[in-house]
Image (cartoon, rainbow, N blue to C red; front, side, top):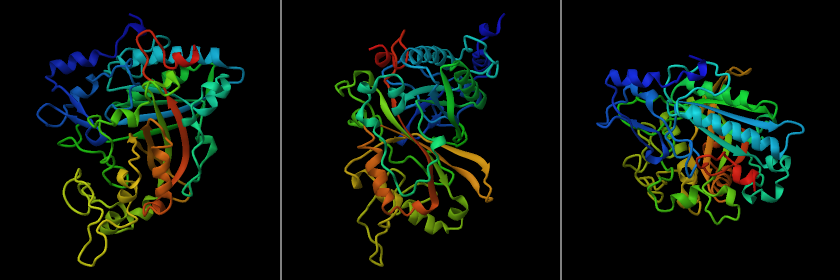
Length: 409
């Protein structure tokens, strides 16, 4: 039997024999929710068995639950590569992603890294940067939503880790499955594209909590509470591009803003618990507003304490970023944490790989970030070090590749 005939799904039979509990997957408040049918922790033997479809109205990796391991990688088309080479590359990448997400090996030269593992909720998502349209002579098809983001005062951007012609997001609940996909995508780029930058991230593992919970970031804060929910009537119009957008190739797609946000953890951890909660505007223990209730309780923004002061300070992060404080601006946040060791100054090079999705970044990310930039109490403890904005087309139909409606128009 050749390597290419070996399926990663061997694990699934073993999981069934072990009596693995079935998964129920959900995204409460945009956070990953992993639970068995009776709300007990996910059985470890079931983690690898979950597969996500590659084909569909939307690309995978947008509304799917957060995975525990992630890789973000940007490519630039090589000198001489244009529309024809880009189309061939997207055809290769799409076929490869469909196989890997189904739990199968790479069609050509599989490395064997993920043999015996199931799909492990693997998702592979593809996007196009602003410069992609110049390189492929498709400037007339470039949407205005890809106009450069405005500068912000909290930025210390590294051009070498920002932008890119092409962007790939990989997520999986097994580290080897995620790395296998990363390596396969990189190899399949061939001579058409070269890596511009790569970032690696992580989240809490499935089943690590006794019940489904919103994820925490490296500051220890519950992160993702106010995310738009698919059950909300305006979710689709906030997150996905409508058919009548004027760019038919983006129908069902979304725009991803990607930011590497360094957390100044040494400074943050010097604050008392009370001060940290005032900076955020929520209790650290359960994510509830300082005005009381549970994590999902609405912020009582006008509530005052016995001293007459606002309970949620006027510069608290939760107050400034609240949709009702920003004309209803909303974005679906789907981040990974990162830790890249200790910097030369002895502080952790750690923080958030911030990824947010919206139908229009000029109505989602930009107005919220502008307001945060003017007076967010969290700003002294974070630093934006890299940035990218990518058009992520709708999901391909069977027999299509991602971006086909653009590249073959």
